[in-house]
Length: 491
Image 1 (tube, rainbow, N blue to C red):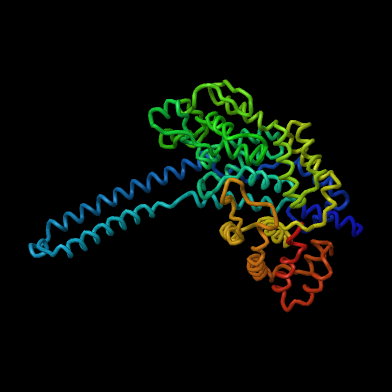
Image 2 (tube, rainbow, N blue to C red):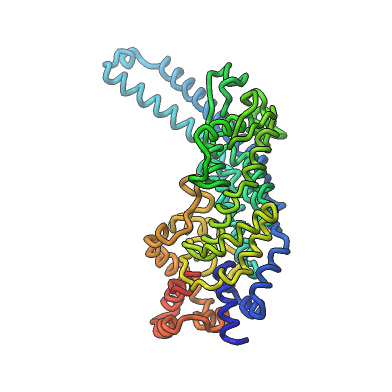
C-alpha cells in the first residue's frame, strides 16, 4: 500500500470514523470512501441492548424507587416522633421546668434526629437510575471502540447531540432515548427521526412539555395554568429551521399550542405503561393553529405530526442540517460547495440521512481540507483507547473522565448540545494532558508507543512526533506525548 493510500485511510478513520485501531488502515486502505459507505449498510443496533430496560421501564423503576424512599422516610419520621413523645412523657418534673433556651435547643435536636432518621431510611433504598445510566454508557462506548471504522457510530453521536436531552434532568431515560429514538433512525429519513425524538417521553420531559396546557384547554381552565414554549422554540431554532430563518414569535406560540397534550403516562397511575408517550386531549389547545403561514385544523396529535412533517421538508432545514453535519465532520467553516451538495441531497431524497452521509464522504470537498479540526473530548478519548486495541471500559472511570474534560456524557448544559468549534474546546486541552498521563500510566505495561506508530498508524505520524516519542524518558511519557500530538487531537 502506498503512503498516499495509507494517508487517505488515516484521514478517513479520523475525520469520519472513531480513529485507527489495529488492522483498520490495512482493511480500508484500498478504497476508504467505499469502506465508509459500506459501513452504513451494517446494523446499528447494540448487540447487548436486550439486557437494558426500555426508557419507560427505566423511568418506572426510578419512580417506584423514589416512591418507596418517600414512604420509608415518612415511616421513619413517624417512628422517631413516637419515640420522642414517649421519652418526653416520662421526663421528670425538673426536666419539664427547663428554661426556654434549653427547651428550644431540645426541640432543635429532636427535629434534627427526626430528619436524620428519615434520611437514613430513604438512603437505605438505592437509586437505580445511576446503574442504568452506567450500563447504557458502557454499551455505547464499547460499540465505538469495537467498530471497524466508526462512521455510523459517529453519526449516532452527532444526531444524539443535535437532538440532545440531559441526564441531569432525566438520567433514567438518557441512554435508552439515544437507543430508541436516535440510533434506530440515524440512517433513515429525517422526518422519521424528527417525529420519533419529539414524541419521545425523554424529550417531552427535558423540554418541559409534560404540563404545558392550552389556555382554553380543559386542564388549562381548571388548573389556571398555561403554555410552555420550550419545545416549539427548540424544534424550530435548533432541530429544524435554524436561527433567523423567517419564523416569528407568533409561530412559536402557535406551534407550542399545537404541541400541548404531548405528554407521558404517569407511572403512579399506570404501573404497566407509565413513562410511555400519550396524547392527553384535556391539555390540548382546541381549534386550528397557523404556523409559518399554513393552517392546521387537526384536533389531536396529528396536528403536531403535520407541523413536524412540514418543518422536516422546509428548505431551511436542509441547509441547517447539512451545515451542522459538514461542520462536525470536516471543518469549523465547512466548504460552501460541500454544504450545498449535502443540502441538495437532503431535498432531493426527502431527507434520506444515509444518502446525505454518502454524498458527504463521496465529495472531494470533504477530503481536501487538512486535518486541522480539533476533536471534541469524547472523540479524542475514544481514538486514544482504540489505538491501544482496548475494547472494554469501566463506565465509572470513562464517564468521570468525560466530565473532567467538559463533555459529560448526555449532560449538555443547554438544549443546543455541545459545540462543534475549536474556540469552545481549546482552553480545555490542558486537562487532556492529565487524562493522557493517567491513561498512559495504566496501560504502559501493555501498550508500546512504537507499535502504535508503526502498526496502528502505519507510520502516518508527523516526524516531529516520532522523534519526541523516541526520545521520551519512559514508555508512559512516550505514550502521553503520542496521545497529545496533533495526529491524535485533530482530524
